[in-house]
Amino acid sequence: MRSLYGKFIAMTAVIMIASALIAFLAVNTYYHQQLKGQNDEKNMSIAKSIASFIESDKELDLINYFETQSAVGYKLYVVNEQQEVTMYGEAFREENLSSKVIDRVLNGDVYHGMRDLPSETFVTGFFSNELANTVGVPFKFNGETYALFLRPDIKMLFTEVHYILGGMVLIMAVFSLLAMLIVAKMLIDPITELTAATKEVGEEKFARTLDINRRDEIGQLAKSFQLMTKKLSENDRIRKEFISDVSHDFQSPLLNIKGYAELLLDDKLTEDSRKNYATVIQSETERLSSLTKQLLLLTSLDQLSSPLEKRTFELDKQLKEIVRKYRWLLEEKEMTLEMDIEEVRFTGDPAFLEKVWENLLTNALKYTEIGGTIEVVLTEQSDQVKVIVKDNGIGIDEEELKRIFDRFYRADDSRTQETGGTGLGLSIVQQVVKLHGGTIDVVSQKGQGTTFTVVFPKL
Ligand code: ADP
Image (cartoon, protein in one colour):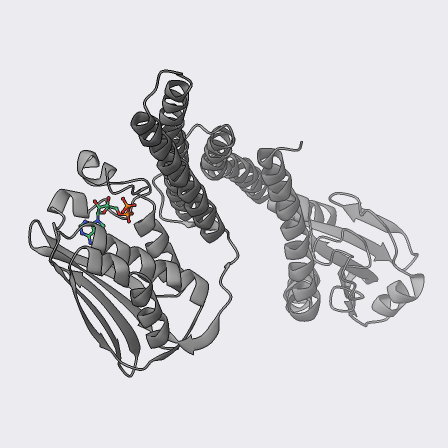
């Protein structure tokens, strides 16, 4: 695997080389387009002043004078009428001046070699150390005509500048690479930490807290990761709790069944006891059966894709039908039922919603004493459909209220044990209401009664 560090450094080096190349090409093009003429003019005026100085001083030691000029930073190429050449200063890389040009200068013309240098992007202009890249002027000395070609000796003029510029570029390059290493480390370290944390989460270890305090994208990623870990750890806890609750809730009826079945094997058992034991076994089996059904229902509700099969139906009729189903229980407990049901057509899954009303109504029946009152209300407003199931039963205290929607939660076990509840009913109710985009609220007071309010938004 190629590390990100390596990639960062390689990319930086490539970018630096590429930008140096582009900068050189841009500057060279600028020289060819703009500066070449000015440079030629400047050197031409120097050459002309040298020529006129020579011509004005008959006593001049010409060789000495040229040597002095070359010492101050010029390369001079002097040709006399016999085409004899004398060079002062560093040699040219290439002596590519045609004899035609030399003759023209000897005949009194000037030569603008710097200005007329061909403009080629990849050929250096200013630095091009060739004889063609000079300016040429004629001069007369002691009755003889000469042609003088000159250009600045870049090496001499720019040695220090070269060192300074070169040093600057080198330091910049080294510094940029080092800085890039530090920046890369700052960027990559949290990613490495995140990778390690991801591995741990993969092994179901959720304890690690990330030491990443940044406000950029990596910080956001770390924050989302931590939120995700928290959620996963919470789910993991719920799953483990759920499994232990399920095992416990299956274990106790099974133990009862086993115990009573053993007792039934006793030959000396009276008819009454036998009937009693068989009844217990029957009710425990029913309990196991309803527990299994509710668990299957909850599992189907937990699926990622919605299990709902929605259609539009008459909600008022459904509610009335459920109330009718439990009328015998109402009568048995001598309870009063008040109904205020409007005609409402509603779009949802009737089978799942039936479970909701059934759970709320049976809970109201279970947890209200003989002679109590239950109220069922269905109203439709412009934007919502509301169902209220209210009882004046035993009520739920504040602490219990927080947990009644939890799976397997039964407030005050000893009290509810005899009701045969599983503690799954309200979780199913809540899940179905949520899947329909609705909300469920509960208001209750110990000893006063409980009101469940289900609200569905109208689409
Ligand atoms: P259960 O099968 O035990 O009824 P639920 O999930 O339906 O399970 O309810 C959870 C707990 O909430 C019940 O055990 C009960 O203590 C409490 N509860 C639910 N409805 C009522 C109510 N109408 N009045 C009083 N307590 C209630």
